[in-house]
Image (cartoon, rainbow over all chains, first blue to last red; front, side):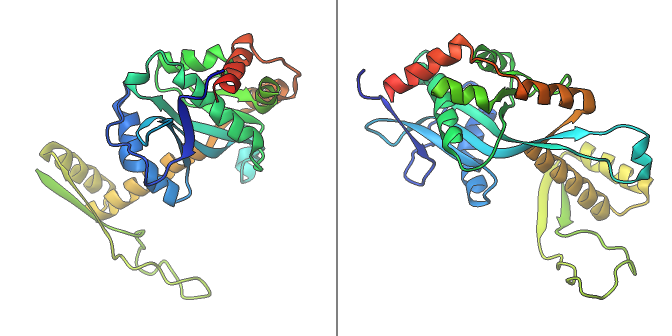
Length: 168
Length: 112
């Protein structure tokens, strides 16, 4: 039980994210150019992993609130507005680690850190939703029990009740 | 290269909005300016003409729709009734975490 090689913090100006590089350029661009903008607009919260003695960002994830809606498709539609039921959820919109951290288990630590934050959040959410960019990412989430969210969507979900049990 | 230039705020057709308790429409004070290849400029111009719209009105409406869609995609997932009901059942079921998830949580606790 050595001291942790990483700290997890809310993205701030002091963090150096200029050199961040993972395999997906869209994930690099997001951290470098758009994460701060979304923070200021209160659209999403970005958390970063930095080496324990450093300010260089080696991983990050993005959290936002989400909802799953029931879409009625029936003759009732003609009568007016479709009826919706809504389940509150949390979205981990992005999660990435730097190439130099490959094999260090940082992706897993980032996911667990997100789970810990969501488990203590005051906000209500019945599940965690993720939006994997490719097959590798999908496999990463499925390993921990994420299952397809509906038949058509590429998104996956994991109930918060399971997250809480795992953390207990 | 061609430029597509759009003024901010929605297009308001003449005579379609009335004075009242509602706010006056926003001024069209902002510009969105992007460089595009000639082929795209030509296609958009043709598409706008087919709809009987000015280039500015067409691009403004298209950009607004795309933006609303992107925001909605981030905020909600829509499921059909059968998928939604199956999800509710899954959320109500008492299930144990995967072994891999429990192991990952233990590793996190040990390292953090």
